[in-house]
Length: 354
Image (tube, rainbow, N blue to C red; front, side, top):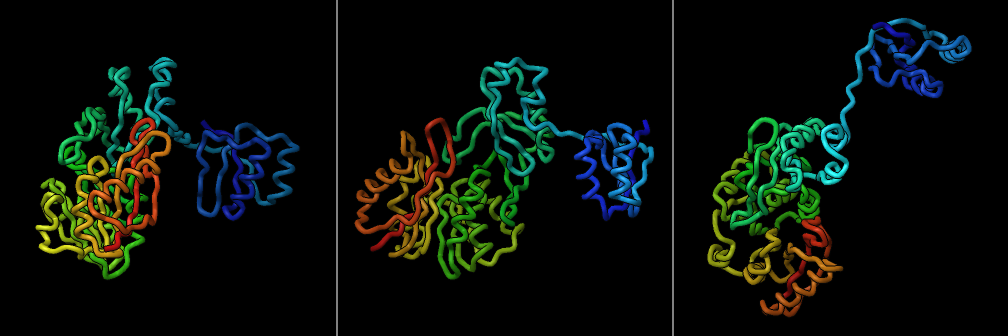
């Protein structure tokens, strides 16, 4: 159906849209058209004679016309908005407020009470996020030496492989076979920007290489990337080909407990990354033996109860004493991300002196 519209030269577009907006004349449900050097703005109603006089006095070449317009596509802002006609208020209140997006794959945790709605929830998530093509629901916690969780495909195309981009890097990830957290994006960038050219870095639990690759992208360094998961190391090798790096990354399929034997030397690393928060304390003695005097250990752990950062620090001091470390300083302590009610992942940067 044709509706009333105002046609004006594009150079006046921003001004006339603001002007018509103040008159409450713009049809917000229709798309503005661009034709050659003109724009055609859909109106919600025919302007009064007084309004037309105002328009023509401010924009002398404006024209009143009739035209066809496409409807605007209004994307829903939340999963609850999509599902409000399918679920009760109490059920809508149980919907998760957040989820992880890795490339074009979304991973969501659905409460048991909403399990019968899981496919609807998956479809709703894709409507809210146009980039998402596949949705998985969590079926278990992260567990095992490979740090992976069981996932159930609930919507979209079935594919567990995707390409995730952050801070100029791209990572190929298989969400069913490796651990990867998009919520650590800033943490990886924070660490990478501390590294200086010429450093030797050991990434003790590298996974598909997000820390290692981001560090080598920004600095001319040697990064030794260790992981026990063969799938993670295979993807790390692929990711090295996908990214243009300034430094060198050396993938190593091994248990980080044997790093000293692996390198056959001690005190050679300028920096060590220990992103295994559930059990990094079990490997701290290895990290201490590997790091140079004055070197940095980026230590990650889980902590809770009131002040999680202080609690994590006090526990770390105990472990360092057990490792024989008497001289150290803390250069940074921060909460990285919540992992459960009253529980956080904490990052502590430690400078070790020998």
